[in-house]
Image (tube, rainbow, N blue to C red; front, side):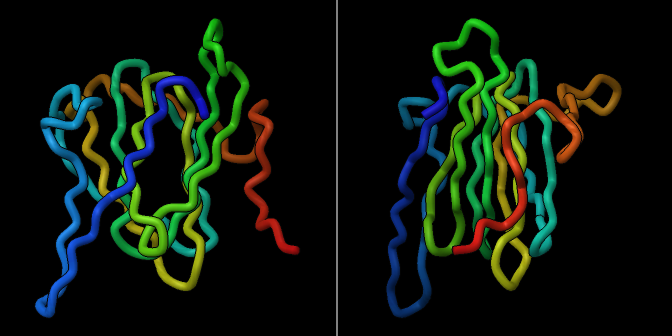
Length: 151
């Protein structure tokens, strides 16, 4: 696992009315601070990424569909520099994924319907000076191929 990445298995509490799933709590050991909450959607088969942040920590939860989220540790000096982690998250695997600053990440919608991720980053988005740095999803030096792996 990439240093600083945290996976929290989420508890789903069902009853006859539906269900409740807590995502992020202020008393979680890893909670830092609240920036904002937003929803991002990946259509089936579409790759959204790569990008990273210099300051922001992300907290991803896939709330509908399934999404493959891939992380790449690009932090020189990190004990896990160059490591790639792959997570399949969503309805069949309800987890919260903590992504530290400078770790490149991307996502791909998998399955038959759009994958929806709620993110609660530690920072608000600054439209004038965004803490977001993009890397081409396919033409880069990251050792990862987004193609579906059959077999």
